[in-house]
Image 1 (spheres, one colour):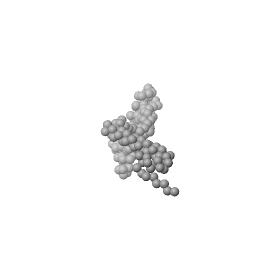
Image 2 (tube, one colour):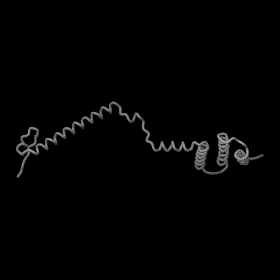
Image 3 (tube, one colour):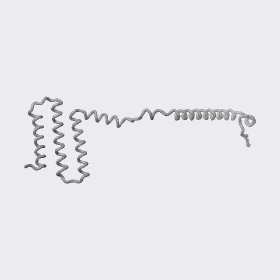
Image 4 (cartoon, helix red, strand yellow):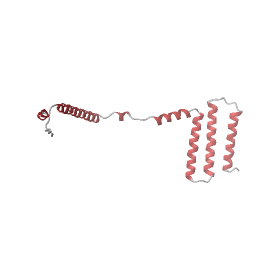
Length: 163
């Protein structure tokens, strides 16, 4: 009777022979059917190999976990490449990475915040206009003689001239 590891190795050899026959000698129409057979048999080989490693190779559990993740990712990439989907997935990932995703709700301010922002802008404009008028008056008053400056009704400060 065969032991489990010997049976697994024999099944791996058998799968390899089937793949060799399908790709070399058995007239299978090229295209999707041949690709599908190769992918299915390849996944069986990868699964049996991973099972053999997990069951019969002594190593730390963390390392086995990392090995399992790497093998599963490699198998997924191989399946995507076999069906011609790898490039679209890479392009989609590249577009996601280079594009800033925003929600339309975040771009629009709620009505209360919008009203507060408009009020602040109006107050700022009024403050800037008052400052501009004050600067214009000061400039006009600086052109007047010293006696007229002190008598200006808009100026509450007294100008002192020292000679």
